Image (cartoon, rainbow, N blue to C red; front, side, top):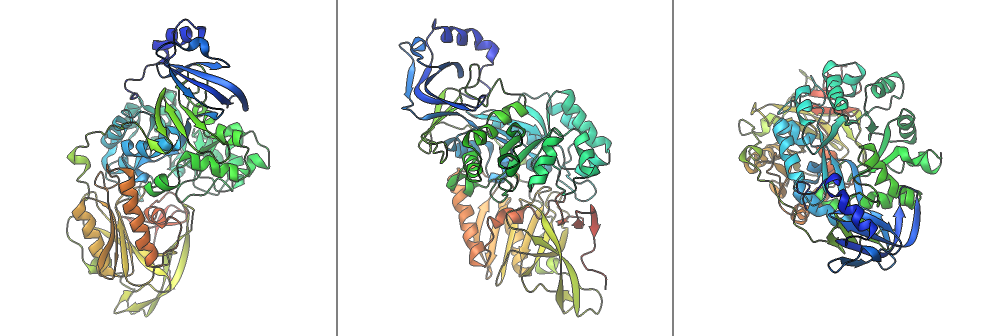
Length: 599
């Protein structure tokens, strides 16, 4: 039952009342389970759930009065009945999958609601791309809600995107049926400075009585943070320490704590609840970014809940953070996030609240997964050619395009270097003393070259700089058209000829990620839709992503989920140092900075 055919409560209210009163039979009864009530934070044994028209009609002991000749019976056999899990903030594109294939990947993990921000495709295709994501999301058998992206570009004046998002775009999208709010407001310096465009987007969202997503990627909790809070964002997921979470909830924002493929920010913040004793209703769990390998091999929101429990959180509180807290935040507590009358019948059966095995998943009253297998179709949108042909280099690139010329007559130079930090989005602004050979600066001692190749307008532009932290050994190159948030092309390498080969390869296949070593391609993940996603099944994409990881490890890279680190090196709204099509960006000052330090 897609969201396009799913009926509103008002259309079925009389039926729900009749079932609860025993005047009409339920479509489905889940019998003999332990009701995990996230409203009261208690577990009630020997309870039944009666479902009509995809919604819960009755929860209580002995639902025999709701059973008729045609009622489907599911025996819970004493298992826990918990609400379907909600991901409060995430980007489908980070899974390298379209909404349909992402849904098919996460349904067996018990995710039945997602609040998605498609700002990756917005940077490539603008409002048109957002509409495509919104429309495919609406076809799915689970709840995929869309937040209208707020910042394309994320930092005006510091990067050039394929398309820009305007306040008029935001106002238009607020009328679409699946839009629930404004995506993360990444341009926090603009909000702090009172930028009229940013405030107009927030105002359009609040006028529509929808939720404004936040993104305050700064450790400064002084006046700038308070100015950002005054600007209207209702949540934030960029906290990395306990003080960040506390500051946000004290200002009336929800602290979203994320565990993605490469972001491990739950353990350092959940102590605000487990040790400081703050009210847990101000805290929400999310993933932000999960690639296909994580989804296939490790899980989705079930993984996050388990992790929160392992960090000392009471299982019932952890479940609240992944269900009712999320629903209430988006004003949807009467629709989802709990097992209660009138809500969508999104229910998980599990035999243990700590290890959380996802044994049976029901969405809108229909069994959608059992024992790790997805049992429903996830319809695909007919993606047009304009969404597939998005890599435009303008010309074939050569090794010379990746040369970094030294200042005149220099034998060595001191260069600024982007320092990768494992399991975190921020980078470090480092420096390195590098040699010069034939007038060209060379990387050494773990310092690789990084280049951003313009791919939206075919300008042929290449910006070169240096990066460290990947640990690559030998001759290699890696290129990706996933380059948050502008999504040009990022190329990292130790061999300029292979860097050019890798870039040209992605131009030929229409986007994706490729890894080269010793003069040959070692791995390729094709992402033909906007250069960001594949419409192939998740397991196929995950297998290619795993081959990519193996190729990276074979060249000495041992970072956890290093691909995710690679893809964020152009994210010019997270400190400290990034690369864009305009140059090297100092994100502590929000300005273009020279590659070489003055001597």
